[in-house]
Image (cartoon, rainbow, N blue to C red; front, side, top):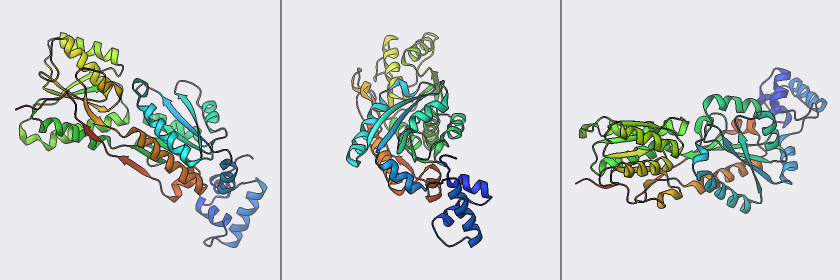
Amino acid sequence: MADVTARDLAKMLGISTAAVSMALNGKPGVSSDTRQKVLATAAKLNYVTPKSRHTERQAKHIISFVIYTGIGVAEQTTFSTFVLRGAEAAAKSLGYRVLVHYFYADQPWDEQIKRILSDACGVILLGTDITEPQRDAFFEFYHLGSVPLVIIDNFLFSAYVDCVGNDNTYGVKSAVSYLIKCGHRSIGYLRSKQRIVNFDDRELGIKLSMEEHADLGLAPLQVLDVDISPDKAREDILGWLAGGNTPAGAYFCENDMLAAAFIRSLKESGYRVPEDVSVMGFDDVQICEMIEPPITTMHAFKERLGKTAMELLSSRIEAGDTLMTSRESGLMKVALSLQIKERMSVRCVE
């Protein structure tokens, strides 16, 4: 039986994984009879300890960096490029080589995961697009591997695996509070029709800020649902404006690509930005400085996300951890704060 894990031994023997670990490592806490059963079963099944696997993998020093593509959110921005850059810089300093894989949600999962795990001593998964049902399906297949895993940009996994991401909720709460501090009392929200956990967290941030400033007499939040694709979003926005709708005085957009599409659509419809409508984005990708006016946004430390994830993964590899043993030793959930990047798309109201 290949790639037997401590969890497999525990299931076969009807005992806990912790008991198996104590027996294999010569630690107290189990009876001599249990210890002998564990050792005998391990020998029979050619069980290899995580540290032994680690020693074998360490010679390969290959990290699989996986970009998950699902509902299309991750494909619409250059966010992944900067995260990968940070991961590669950290990997180089730590002595690892990074291989980039794309994981397609609409293609067979088992073969893709086998390819990702082949020769890898660890995996970083950029999981922006992964939804809750897909999370459960992913772990159903990932048990094939015995290497540590770190997820970037999706805290749906935080009860199961180490995660590194942005503090979306409080970052957006700060963004909307900034608009209110600038004197805006009519707030709008450009909301993607395609929902991911990050967008839901950002929506919560808007609600928290609106509730916190309710005593200022704010108008009801104006929500405009648009497609995540900038071209389709433009069509949605132009159709909404052509229908006689009047935009709020200041908008938070769920990412910079939507903010850019909104600015273009407003200008095509005769509105001035920021004189008539202020617009704020999220992520701080290149489009922010390529459009007129340049977009005020929430700056995400994208390269630092990659760097932090790589350093965390390296610590797991050095400890000989697998996906399962990482849970036993205590998982890490690292949320990076965001920073307001003031440009020209938001004006303060006197």
